[in-house]
Image (cartoon, rainbow, N blue to C red; front, side, top):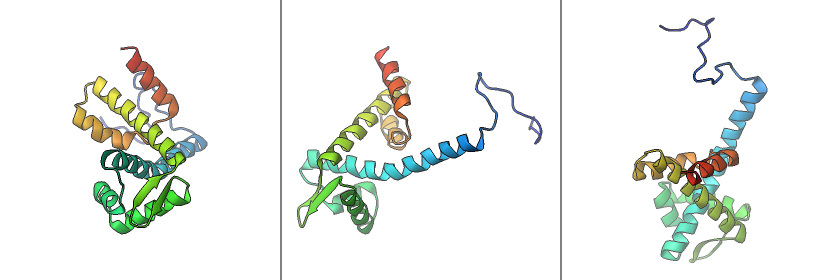
Length: 155
């Protein structure tokens, strides 16, 4: 039976269905927008690290192809990484990560593995877990990651 505008849904498993305050909701949405913005940096840094480890170089052309973006888009993103102090590049030599870039890549890789491991632990097939983790890993708080790790360690 559909709810009318004045009816409130019943609580589900002890979770409040009340609308959060404006401040709380704005903070949550702001956090999501911020995560979407940093997700771009993190995806590029993670891929650059993987390319450097796997094939020895990270060329803008390879980055663009693997991320499914245009060469121009990859060049713009790489420029942003350089301005942020996460990457450097040399003419005809590709893109390299700075110390800060390597640290971010390690953090992102660790977070990715933790999300994948949790998804697999709850029964998600490995291939789906890898794909889903790409979207989830940028939006999970440190507190949630700690809970994921604790859950996995307790098994």
